[in-house]
Length: 75
Image (cartoon, rainbow, N blue to C red; front, top):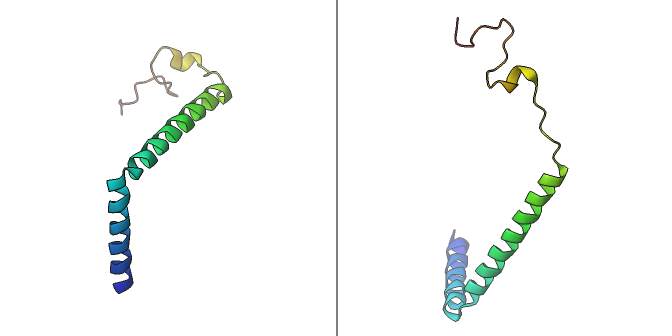
């Protein structure tokens, strides 16, 4: 437990120093830029890899298909 407190104090001290020097803002901006780039690449890959959606005649009208043709709420 004492090791955790000591590590937390050191991490807080170092973090405060980095924050005061402005180095964390550069780090944050870099992370945001990388995240945005990765997100855009992933979205492009999904668009290229996804097949066209298949529409069946039973669901094309917007009503769900049921075996008996009755409304799903009718019991």
